Each structure stands twice: as structure tokens, then as C-alpha cells.
Amino acid sequence: MDQNYNWKNIRTLLTEGFTAEELRRFCFDEGNFRAVYNKLTQDTGKDKIIDLLLDYANQKLQTEILLIWAKEHNPIRYEKYQPYYDITINPTISTDVNRKPQKTVFISYGHEDVEAARRLYQELKAEKGIEPWFDKENLLPGMKWEPAIRKAIREADFFIVLLSKNSTSRKGYINSELHTALEILKQFPDDQIYLIPIRLDECEIHIEDLRDIQHVDFFPDWKKGLERIRVVIKSRIPIEKPEGEKMETNSSGLGYHYRVGIVDLDIGLTNLFQLAQRLNTIQNYFHFTCPTLPSITNAVREIEGQRNLDVHQVPDNFYEEHQYLSVDLIACLTKYPLAFRENGKLLSNYFSGPGEKDDRFMFISTHLLYELIRLAGCTFEKGIIYIIISQLVVYFTDWGYHDATLGCVMDFCENRWDMVEGLKSMRFCDGCKVMIQNPDLEKALNRMLLDDMRL
Ligand SMILES: [Zn+2]
Image (cartoon, rainbow, N blue to C red; front, side, top):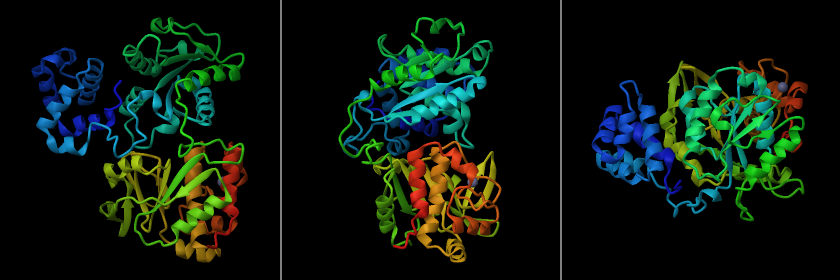
């Protein structure tokens, strides 16, 4: 695959720039793409047409023809969704697929094996340079799951399928994911490893196409199996540059695991930089910086008599800025309460939540925070940290907010004033403590909670 192409942008260009009918006509008119046209039926939807087009263009090296046509017929969208990576803007993006700092691993499983999938996800996630994809973690509320899964499979460097007596005895969705993966596998040279079947028990591998592929047994010894997977995945990870890359080893007490940007969307807070510095001196799991992002005041609107930042209205180009920021996560502070869409419903007046299109963006509201911290007797910065920490927990663990107000960082606080309890005690409740299973992460979070943040 030619990594000069920004496939995500090309997909968006085709999705937003053309109707299904126009795409069909292109396939028909352009002789090179007639093979795609022949695969289309009356019922083939636009997403599927685009899938077929991109697969074919990539496989037959016809992407240029597709792009020339797209540019000619919709120059505005073409300009907006640059189909090539601009190497001059971001020199870390290389043209060599093997130089990507992260290897993404799609985990496919039958629902009976969800616990094994979750365990594998957590163990891979803890590995430097491996970014696993697990639907329970990576599918955001409101996302269309089918296209999202297809996209994740297509963009993954490895596809792992978990097989067990339970899952192989049932016909189900696992087969549809596998089907996509097997299609992609055909595009790779024979010696390139992409699809890895994992056996969780002594099950028969009944899927014809999988029989030829070397599988790995995760029984009787899970650890040994994991180690084999790890080596295979890492053998394709390039040697990192000495600085600037995510997830430096922390066991020696040096370096950090993740870079977190703190951005003030309203540009009203003056001491964020000192705040970031302070956080960096008290813990080294995260490295905090203060990048800048474009204004998104257009997304502010009145909901039930109150102005909210409607996260659903945050434009794509805001999220696209991520690639230029040299951070892993971004905490976006705003003075407005937040509104989100969940299953088509509009929920407003929230403290925090992840970006609907990219959960590496954490939206954090400071609405009423001055009043809340005054009642709790802590500093404003401390209040900000408190909300950021709950979002970090949501991002890095399986855990989320709880309805009960326990004076815990993870209190949901349907009534905003309940947050005073948590701000006063600055701790995790016993239930939440055990959910943070990463001791380094736990240590860092506690250090941030315990610091008084008087800057
Ligand atoms: Zn709790």
C-alpha cells in the first residue's frame, strides 16, 4: 500500500463530494473501473460502492485516475480533503508503511469470548507501540458501527481473530469481520503476516481460508501465546527515534507514557502553562503541554435556555488538527456546559465527555467551577485537574462514571452541586480504586489529586 495516500481523506472526499449515482457512473465510464461497476447491484449502497472503489484502486494502482476524476468534478471538496499526506507539514509521517510508530491490531471475537478479548486488548494496550482496536473500547456512542468496524479492519496492521469451541460452533457476526479481513489479506504478499488466528481452547478451525494460516494457541499458557503475538507484531515496529515518541518506558522513572495537551477554547484562562508545568513536575506518566486549536464558537448554541457547547456540532477540521499537535490526548476547556448526542438524543449541561468523532479529544466544561471550588475550598486549577482526571480514567480504563455520589472523582453528579463532595475529598472510592489496574497510571492520578495546585 502506498502510504502517500491519505485514505481517510479520500474516503471522506468520495462520501461528501459525490452521490452514489455519480460514483456508479464513474465506474461505468472509466474503463479501468468497469470491474467495480460489474460488481454493483441495484441495492449496493454508497458506502459499499466506496469500499469497492478504494479496494480496487489500491489493488490495481488506479488511485491516481480516481483522484484526477474527483478533482475535476468536485475541486472544492478535493481541496478540503487533501488526498495526500503533506510531508512538509508533518515530517513524522513517512512514506514507508513500516515506519509508523504504532501498529494497530484489530481484535475480532464472538460475544462468548468477550472477556478474553478484553484481556487481550488490555495487555496489548499496555505494550509500547501497539494500538489494539476492540469494539467495546473503540466504538463511540452514536457511531455507525458497521462502517466504523469496516474502516478499523481496513486500517489495521494486524487482524486477530479469537477462536473457541463456543464461537466456532455458531454462525454469527465474527464471520462478517473475518470475511473483510480475508479480502484484505489477498492484497498482501504471501510472506506478510496480517491475519492471526488465536485458539482459546482446543477448538477445530473449520473456516477453510484460515486453515492455511499459522495459528497461535493461548492455552494452556496464555502468557506464552501472548508473547508470540507480541514478537510478531513488534517485529514490524521500527526502531524509534530517541525522543518525542509516545510511551517512553517508565519503569526506570524516566520519560512518560502519554502526551496530553490542555487547550482553552475560549482563551480566557491565563495560567494553563504553569498548570501544565506543575503537573509535569509531580508525576511522569503524562507529559502535559498547552497547544492551540482553532475557535469553535460556531458549535455554541442555546439549549433549554442555556448556552452549551454542542459537541455534536464540532466540525471535522477541528479534530483533524490533532495530527499537527504532537500530543496523544487533548483536554479542551470551555466555559460553556457541554451537550452531546447519544442514540439520537440531545443531552445537555454536562461537565465533560469525549469528542463524538475522536475520543482523543476530551471536552471539559468549567461552567460553575468557580462557585463549586469556592464551596469545596480548593483552587480553580485543582477543579480543572479533577475533571481532567475523570476523563483520563474514562479513556484509559474500562471504568466510567457512577450515578451514586460517593465523594469520588467518578461521581456522575446529575446535580452539578454534588461535585462539591468530590472536590472536597479528592479521591477515588474503593470501587473505583480497584478498577484502575495499571499501577503507574494510578500513582500518577493520585499524585495529581493530592497536589494542592496553588500556583
Ligand atoms: Zn468511585
